[in-house]
Length: 389
Ligand SMILES: *Cc1c(COP(=O)(O)O)cnc(C)c1O
Image 1 (tube, helix red, strand yellow):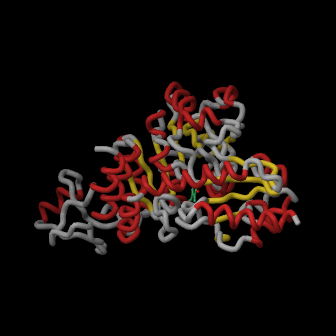
Image 2 (tube, rainbow, N blue to C red):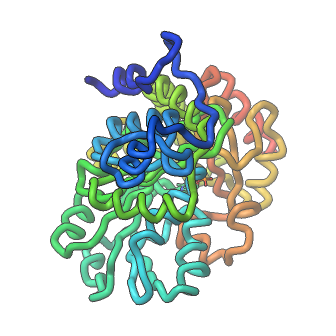
């Protein structure tokens, strides 16, 4: 069926009381009819739930939908986005392996590469997003995985998925894409050759800032290997969160349509604003990778970034003068949220390091919510007026 229908109609089948909406299965374990059934289930000879660290009807429903939406064969749900990133990598990498990644990464993913994996002898190198002709030459003999995020956070740089998908396939390297910013509604990395698609479900998939969650999706053999690792290390998603997230998927398409419509309008409005130095939105012609963004993303996404004149002070003053928009690190919420990376998430970096990930002193990231666009624009406009004066 079509995307919206799969997202709404896929349900756990074991409804006991003819409930129309899937119930929550808050149970840590499941019973067996006999010793023989227990033996067969433990040995994967017959399917069935055993213990909620392995599987549960709610996590099954969530992950079945995620696979349908991303066009992947199999998947695993995890407690958070970071547990999805960590599990998808640590299950497949070993001492001496190398990961080739884009530098424009979520902060904690950058920490995995720079401080956590080196403890286990796993190395990485970062390629320059704007020099695709150099990517192939950076592949080493021990390169086991290519890892990217696109659009990137918060710079909204676009990475060419088709190019990397082909490169990874030619060289027999696992291609892992964090698809959190786009969601499967806008972009399906598996169609461009990604072996693994990872998610923070905390963001647009939840969509209302309530729960944490993650997903690892991909080809059957790869997921089987990761499943073994996950089963014994325990990054499992709770049934309650899976229930919330599965419900959230039912409205993903309509929410994303509106997030993108509002974000495009906001980006267009701000483009010529004289209190700003730069405005970025993937589906605005002014974006340096507009053509690529049009090719691989159905719509431009729910995030707009811009650079307020006046550096760090300008960015901070803009935040302080907002009346409605929430100052909070989460994104993908029904509510419009704002962050100023230079004074918060990226304050420990030097100015040069920040520039390398697309963050200027005055860069502000807006996650455009589902409020009336006129109210969003009005709040931003009045705050910009105060920064200027
Ligand atoms: C938030 C985020 C993560 C981490 O997800 P959590 O659910 O917070 O653990 C990973 N990647 C990207 C791009 C994110 O925005």
